[in-house]
Image 1 (cartoon, one colour):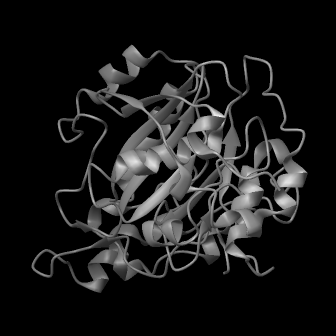
Image 2 (cartoon, one colour):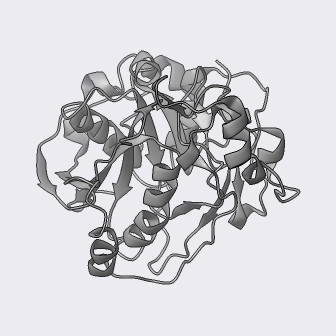
Length: 322
């Protein structure tokens, strides 16, 4: 299966009811200027949705003014409390059209309280401009076990699907901020990678199979590959395993730009035997993922996200050693 690298879909961002849709000329007049003047390394000038697909309120701002300064969650709540269209749990949908995608944003979390409000400050307005229906799911790991990012994504998926029939899943690290709102957070016929151009890697892929940071799959794609692996305790390897589950070709799409927030805590402990696990990705795929997942969740609601707290242990997703 091929993987699209930050590729904008050649389809409407938002399906506009015919009675509301202005003429193609009106679309072009309202929004065409937002499709030019991209930076040289920004691919959107070659990769945009045709101007006549745009709804009047969808005019893209292009490069986003990134503000990495710390801000408290109380300040973020105050900022977005002025928007009555954001419902409990951070659920939002456009009122002027039928959204092209219903997107669940899954954020794995542990002790990154300074990064979450920064992410919400940037991402909520961008997703609203893209006219996507969305909600945020912060999946928080407690306990003493090493961080298991992949298993948290599996938990988040199971919990999100209890709320709504989502059709697009975005797996989003809390410290990654999109640099352009033309990095469209919808899904497509191929799995999508939204962070191929990351500032800490000088906007280059660190290695060919890199699929980390921010990625997107349809619900159908995610179920077909049995989700993320649960066997990766500690830092590294789970995104590479997910890549192996796709068996992608070497064809590249166009890149999505992101920047990463600096860490205030020590880096996570790397998983030393991750390469041994990766060598057996295919053998393990049928038995390690959504189908061997067990968990006990404590669910609470914030004004801007649903918080899912879990104490993960290897016994909750036992995997045969390979």
